[in-house]
Image 1 (tube, one colour):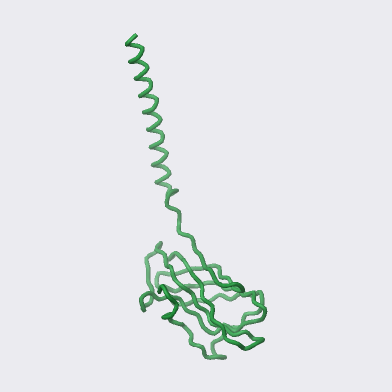
Image 2 (cartoon, one colour):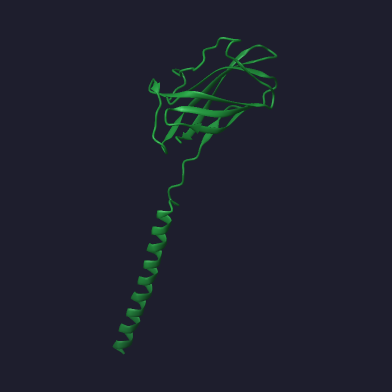
Amino acid sequence: MAAYRLQSAMEYITTYGWALVVIAIVGAVLFYLQIFNPAPSTTCVLPAGFSCTNLYMSQNGLLSFTILQTTGSPVNMTAAGCNSNTTISSMIMEKPYNPPSNQVTVDIGNNYTMAVQCYSAGHAFSGKVGSSFLGYLIINYTEQDSNLPHTIYGNINVQVS
C-alpha cells in the first residue's frame, strides 16, 4: 500500500515538473522575442483643426513631421519649435515671425511636411537610436481670412531612429 502512495507521489512530482519546465521555456522564448517589451509608441497630439503624422527624429534631434490642417480657412504657418521642457514658456522657435519671407501657406484639408530642431535644457537634443523624446511642439500661424495670428501647442512622443 505504501508503494502505491510513493508511486503516486512520484507521478505527481514528475507531471508538475514537466509542466514547470514547459512554462519556463515558453516564458524564455517570449522574453527573447521581446513580447514583454514592445516598441514605444509614437504620438503627436495637437488641438482640433490640426493633426500630425509621419513623425521621425534623427539622432541629432531633427524632428520631421507632416501637419494636416482642417481649420475653416487657409493658414500661413510662420514658425515652429520643439522642446522637452515641462512648460511651453521657454520654447525655442526655429523661425521667428517675419511674414511674408518665411511663411508657408497650407490650404484647408492639405498637409505640409516640415522639420524642426528639438531642444532639451536649452541645447539641441541628441539621442541614441531607440531612445525616446518626450516634449512639446509649438506652431505659429495666421489665418488668411482674418489675418489673426495664432499659436498652437501639442504633445509629442517619438523614438529616435
